[in-house]
Amino acid sequence: MKIEGLEVPGLLLDAMRDGVLPSGRIRGAVQALPQPSAGYFAETDLELIRTPDELQPGGSPIADTASLRKMADSTELAEKYRVKRGSAEARPVELPWLDVEQALVIGGGADYGDDTWVVLDYRTGANDPRVAVNVWKEGKPSEVEWRELAPSMSEFLTMLGVGKQPV
Image 1 (cartoon, rainbow, N blue to C red):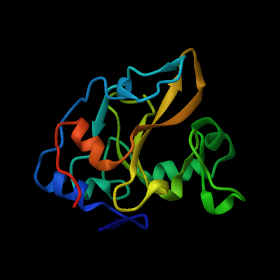
Image 2 (cartoon, rainbow, N blue to C red):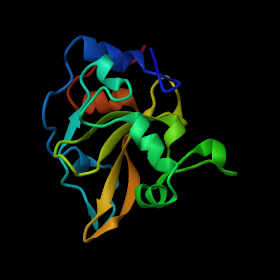
Image 3 (cartoon, rainbow, N blue to C red):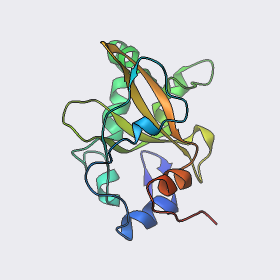
Image 4 (cartoon, rainbow, N blue to C red):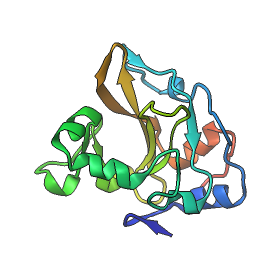
């Protein structure tokens, strides 16, 4: 299954179809960042997209890949949310920026308006991409950075207690 040109990892599709992804709030997931940045707000609760249909553009009230890509087309929003289209850049886009052409939204903040996205970041590989999340600077709502939440989708699922490993 492809969404916005990106192949959804079988590991994620299996977890969705098996109904083993956590439902509702995932408390403290952002606090588990391997290397938290000083001064960045890490208390956001997350919620995951739960079905393959919700991965489609406009399919989920939680977060949407198409919306994130549209932000990259706005100079003001691209700067605020640190998102770029890699195909428009002379050099590869690296963290703390997100290349929206290499990202698939799989979740977001659990509270309406917290402007947090959880994405598969395909810059590390298509089969088991890393999981990244945007984190907001405390006291400065205009400063955000993208951080690795887990080095791979399989490790993210293990972190959530789902535990299937890729073959």
